[in-house]
Length: 229
Image 1 (tube, rainbow, N blue to C red):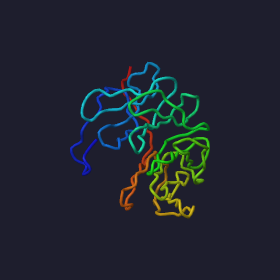
Image 2: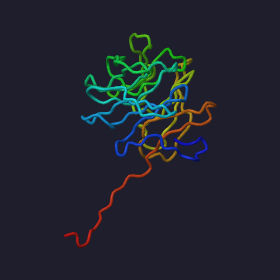
Image 3: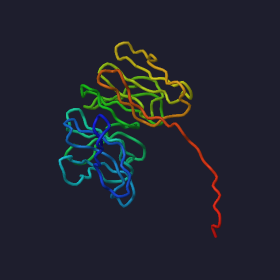
Image 4: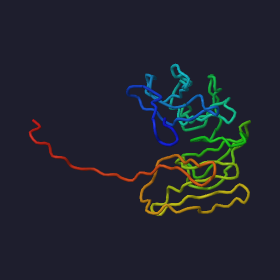
């Protein structure tokens, strides 16, 4: 991690090889969630929690499949994550202090986001278009908006959802879905965007800026090696 002004980077994990994915701050700012293949013998992704005050990371999940994209609930008591432990991507949850996972979605689910008021869980489904929601207390899922947002390039705020349309190959756009009106409007054009981008979208508190990732270069070369025998 690094300071907001981009200086003084601080290494948080030291795993000496295994990759770390999808870090997530706790609401109190004292812990970080992430997924990694650091220890499981089967090579699957697992969820870990790290106390920034010191100490070793705690492994929170185990079992078959892969566990990724962990987030805390707004009150910090629950951890939601994507898992293939039932065979396909679905949303599961565990208590923040650890425990047995409980399945949240039944018809698939990928990359959870809890609503700012803590009442709903929003998510996408790899096999279908759209952003869906389900009450955190349980209930039937509802499609919120029909957009190609499965990649995770979207963010939920108090009154709507911002998202990027990764199906647009050039001059892609940032869009806004309003909860009040149910309408989708184009907010900005990302000119010269010829390639799809990775997942993730973050919106500044004042709504003046958004952060996203972009793949700007792909390429390959043929190399000639002399005297290789």
